[in-house]
Length: 69
Image (tube, rainbow, N blue to C red; front, side, top):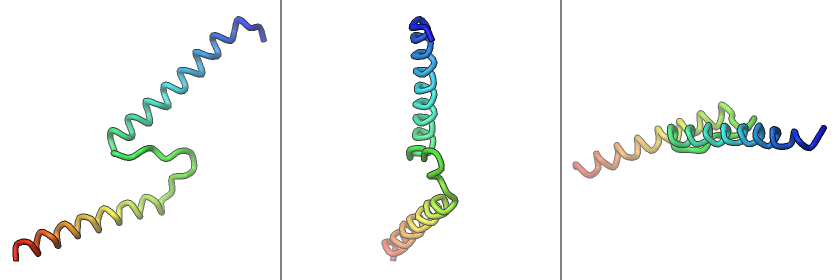
């Protein structure tokens, strides 16, 4: 491959990296947590995060009820 094509390869590689960065930034802005990469995302992790959110909601409700008594 001639060296003249290296600039094109750098541009294409840079475009892939910019797109990946934008997707990660949008995910973080929308959901408040970084995007899990590759095969690291699992239904179990999703269920645990939903469970934790429910526990925090219930704890806040119990504290609110205890403060009003």
